[in-house]
Length: 368
Image (cartoon, rainbow, N blue to C red; front, side):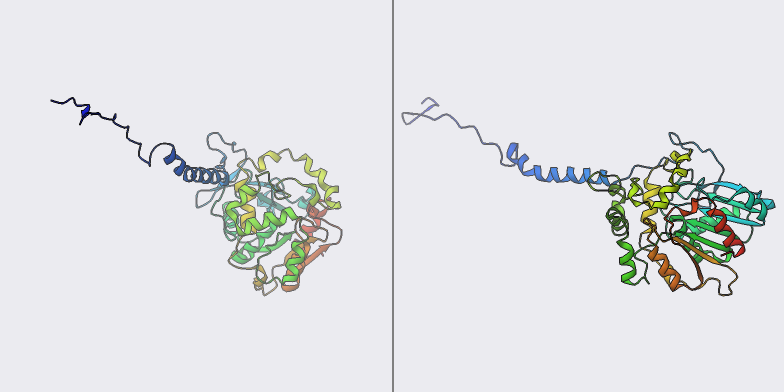
């Protein structure tokens, strides 16, 4: 029998090692690498865009609750602060809505003398996500009016009350005028934020106002309106300048603003403002304030056709944060709004000495 390694007198060649399948090894990995890298980049981008969860006051590991609060029907809490004369002795009851990056302690500065003379009870509250009020991720341009109505009812302020609001808190006065006019005895809007996309603004008015803003604010407002899901990233990234107010850029302050700015240095409670996180306070404010509203204040009819309730709008002519052009046009378009323009004032005029008394007397007594 012939040897198994020999055939026809020739030595057989050794068997060759089979080649690995084309789909395995380094060549397979190299084909999958672009897909893996793309998925990793997507995951990283998604993580960068997501805001951290808010630190809700009173929950484990979060800031404590230090002041009085009410619980709303949906389970959220609103923190509040009372000043002036006792509620049961008051002739006038005013609810004040604070501005951007502020809290309930940043209330309208009414002198004790005027409060006693006229019998003024002043109630201010933390808007959702600020201070010690729970965040409201489902907040809309309408929801804050019903929060205010619940607050008034919980504290038994009676069938009607006065309202005043500053800056972003001034903008939400429109929501109250639209949604709860039957509860209002009078309204004062102080340098109210305007939404450039409200229908009714002529293009020359909105364009002129738009260019009063710093360029960094133009971009921050664009993002809040067109891509609200990018608002957190835009105001926390380091590649481009964020909102000037969020980033404390003094270039946005007028000369008069700079003169009154030292008064803000004594805010011992300043750390409370953003303590639950910037996204559900500052960023949510921008997303709602500059977002897509379902209605426009410029198209509102007079909610008080009998003239029994006065609506006041105050604005500084040198305001670099909220351009005065928007308020000027609103006053022209809505003749039922009583307009007060302060020729040398900037955005912070409500905290100037004596200005709180002037605003309140105008609203309560009709002193212009």
